[in-house]
Amino acid sequence: MGSRVSGPYMDSPPPPPPRPPSPPRHPPHPQGERHVGGEMLYQDTDHRLRALVGSAEGFGRHAIGGLYGAIHRVTSLQDDGPGSLREACRAEEPLWIVFEVSGTIHLHSYLRVSSYKTIDGRGQRVVLTGKGLRLKSCHHVIICNLVLEGGRGHDVDGIQVKPDSTNIWIDRCTLADYDDGLIDITRQSTDITVSRCHFMRHDKTMLIGADPTHVGDRCIRVTIHHCFFDGTRQRHPRLRFGKVHLYNNYTRSWGIYAVCAGVEAQIVSQCNIYEAGGGPPKKTTVFKYMPEKAGDREDVVAGSISSEGDAFLNGALPCLIDNPGSVFRPEEYYQQWTMEPASPALKDIIQLCAGWQPVPRPPDDR
Image (cartoon, rainbow, N blue to C red):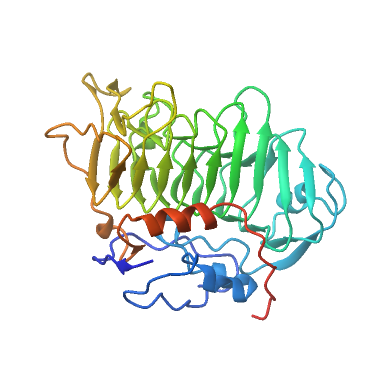
């Protein structure tokens, strides 16, 4: 979408996959490409099944999911048993999981996803309800085109990423109405991208960084882009300790604040749209600072936020503080990302294209 930002490549590659040493190269978007007519970036990946791999942007771009695994077909909407999603997710080997059925899967407990899995909902409309997905100590997972809504119980999140999980990409999912968070990323989980997702009907939307005592969360790195935070109340996201890059998201009608920087957080906000609303009274605070004391330090501090090219609409107030402290530079971690100026056209595209989409499942012609 629009121009690209470039810089030196400094982070290390992912751990080697269990089969061939590297995924096939996927051609980058042309310099200066623009998307028009209700299109969004990555739509070129829908021409073949595994083209998702290599197209992600941001910190989670190295995720390969089940690239080197067999196609596994989910044929049952049961919580467990033959043909179920749970059966596929517990398998030890890499798998590219697709669905032969549409409908609702009622989860009676968290569905734990093991490493090297792609859960690909294209071609069907699969709704997960009751509980959510748990990515626990796993690596290289891609979750695409699912609906998660109606999760019930203490500490029940839509997608829970903890502990020590790495190289995760959550793309084009719709999440709503869980008793805790929609996406929680904590306990040293890092190198994660959340893209093109639609968040709605919820309070505490996205927590990144567990609490001030978990100082190991200083390693967390997350990219969030082209997401639609649709009237959700707060935490878009709330961050402690880690680094978060936000670009080309649309956040509207929040109920407390849009984005929160807790202890030692570093947030880079670029070309996002923040539109106040909600209430009455209407909530206008975009950036909130939450001073906290890290478990291994004596000072009570908040984090740092930088805002560049953001649009503040309908009375939205940035509420940035003077001399906030240093933030990271995304270009020190990845070479390029696809970004365009905040505009009415961008807002329209995000509303249309974020979240679950009725796209056909592409052929697997690798």
